[in-house]
Amino acid sequence: MENNMIKPIKRLSLRDEVYQTLKKSIINLELKPEERLSDKELAEKFGISRTPVREALKRLEDEGLVESIPGSSTRVAPLKLEEAKHAFTVVAALHALAARLASPLLKEKDIEEIELSNQTLRLAIENGDVIKAIEADGSFHKVFLDAAENPEIALALERIVPKIQRLEISQFISVKGLKSVEQHNQIISACKNHEHEKVVRLVEDNWLSLGELLSQQMGPR
Image (tube, rainbow, N blue to C red; front, side, top):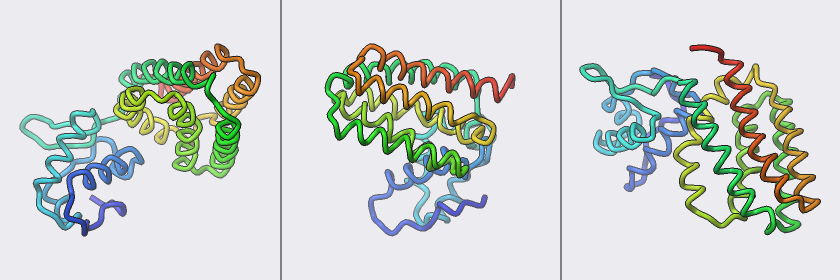
């Protein structure tokens, strides 16, 4: 099990560190879908005992990123198109709610920030840098989440979004990512014109159209 992100951990507080490292490895597909996960091997790589690794794997299993096969082993959860479709519907609704709360409150610095994030997104897509593209897209939408000042929305998204991000990364080469950049430009324009309901609709459409595009790219599984 080769993984350059997993290295010995020197700090004493381990559970969250192990969880975050494994989660990032799974989302970025460094740990492949359906790859076997041995708590013993992982503990050796981290340079720690097996207990915090087991705790991290259990937490990831609760979030649907890891699964245990009865009588067999623990593995990274496979990519599930149907599950991702449901996730996109929920994510679109939550981001639309954040946009509804945030749009009337956006300041000039917020507009500048989403413009910068969208420029970064375009460059990342043109350079084929999938991780940077997803980070830039996340930064774009985080402006609305922060301005909405409703932590429950962010907490709900934190649990669901990783399932979508794995699918985005797996299909990045074939997805027409620049379409999202243009949709973001429309959102920015609506924000500048104080067209609050239009912002809400465009944000929701942005997520739903991405979900539909990824579904088409993957096809029936």
